[in-house]
Length: 78
Image (cartoon, rainbow, N blue to C red; front, side, top):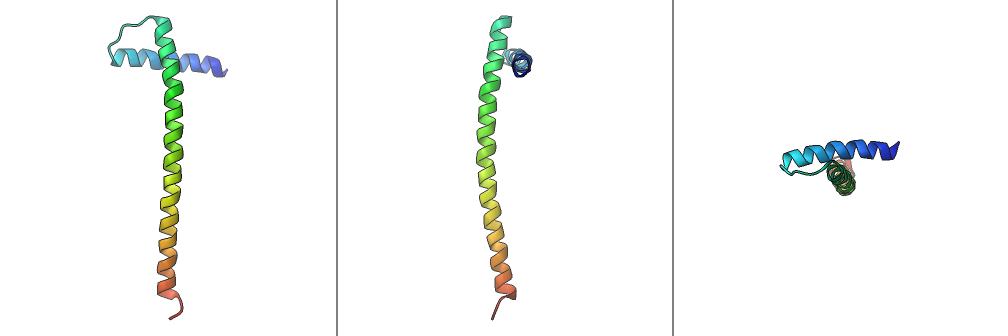
Protein backbone atom coordinates (compact mmCIF):
# COMPACT_ATOMS: atom_id res chain seq x y z
CA UNK A 1 0.00 0.00 0.00
CA UNK A 2 2.90 2.38 0.73
CA UNK A 3 4.30 2.12 -2.81
CA UNK A 4 0.87 2.70 -4.36
CA UNK A 5 0.35 5.74 -2.13
CA UNK A 6 3.82 7.07 -3.08
CA UNK A 7 2.94 6.68 -6.76
CA UNK A 8 -0.36 8.53 -6.33
CA UNK A 9 1.13 11.36 -4.27
CA UNK A 10 4.17 11.50 -6.57
CA UNK A 11 2.00 11.77 -9.65
CA UNK A 12 -0.11 14.52 -8.12
CA UNK A 13 2.90 16.43 -6.77
CA UNK A 14 4.79 16.08 -10.03
CA UNK A 15 1.78 17.25 -12.02
CA UNK A 16 1.26 20.29 -9.80
CA UNK A 17 4.98 21.13 -9.70
CA UNK A 18 5.40 20.92 -13.48
CA UNK A 19 2.36 23.15 -13.98
CA UNK A 20 3.51 25.75 -11.43
CA UNK A 21 7.07 25.75 -12.79
CA UNK A 22 5.77 25.69 -16.40
CA UNK A 23 7.88 22.67 -17.36
CA UNK A 24 6.95 20.23 -20.10
CA UNK A 25 7.69 16.68 -18.98
CA UNK A 26 6.42 13.24 -19.87
CA UNK A 27 4.27 11.15 -17.58
CA UNK A 28 7.16 9.03 -16.29
CA UNK A 29 9.37 12.05 -15.64
CA UNK A 30 6.50 13.83 -13.89
CA UNK A 31 5.81 10.88 -11.60
CA UNK A 32 9.52 10.35 -10.82
CA UNK A 33 10.01 14.05 -10.10
CA UNK A 34 6.97 14.02 -7.84
CA UNK A 35 8.08 10.88 -5.98
CA UNK A 36 11.60 12.19 -5.41
CA UNK A 37 10.18 15.55 -4.39
CA UNK A 38 7.85 13.84 -1.91
CA UNK A 39 10.77 11.92 -0.37
CA UNK A 40 13.02 14.99 -0.15
CA UNK A 41 10.18 17.20 1.11
CA UNK A 42 9.22 14.62 3.71
CA UNK A 43 12.78 14.39 5.00
CA UNK A 44 13.16 18.17 5.15
CA UNK A 45 9.80 18.53 6.91
CA UNK A 46 10.73 15.87 9.48
CA UNK A 47 14.05 17.64 10.11
CA UNK A 48 12.29 20.98 10.59
CA UNK A 49 9.78 19.44 12.97
CA UNK A 50 12.57 17.80 14.96
CA UNK A 51 14.54 21.07 15.18
CA UNK A 52 11.53 23.18 16.08
CA UNK A 53 10.42 20.49 18.52
CA UNK A 54 13.77 20.63 20.29
CA UNK A 55 13.75 24.42 20.16
CA UNK A 56 10.22 24.49 21.54
CA UNK A 57 11.37 22.21 24.36
CA UNK A 58 14.18 24.63 25.17
CA UNK A 59 11.82 27.61 25.15
CA UNK A 60 9.38 25.72 27.37
CA UNK A 61 12.17 24.79 29.77
CA UNK A 62 13.36 28.41 30.03
CA UNK A 63 9.81 29.66 30.59
CA UNK A 64 9.25 27.00 33.24
CA UNK A 65 12.48 27.94 34.99
CA UNK A 66 11.53 31.62 34.89
CA UNK A 67 8.15 30.79 36.43
CA UNK A 68 9.81 28.82 39.23
CA UNK A 69 12.28 31.65 39.90
CA UNK A 70 9.42 34.14 40.06
CA UNK A 71 7.44 31.90 42.43
CA UNK A 72 10.53 31.40 44.62
CA UNK A 73 11.25 35.14 44.75
CA UNK A 74 7.61 36.00 45.44
CA UNK A 75 6.59 33.30 47.91
CA UNK A 76 9.92 31.88 49.07
CA UNK A 77 11.80 32.50 52.32
CA UNK A 78 12.69 36.09 53.09
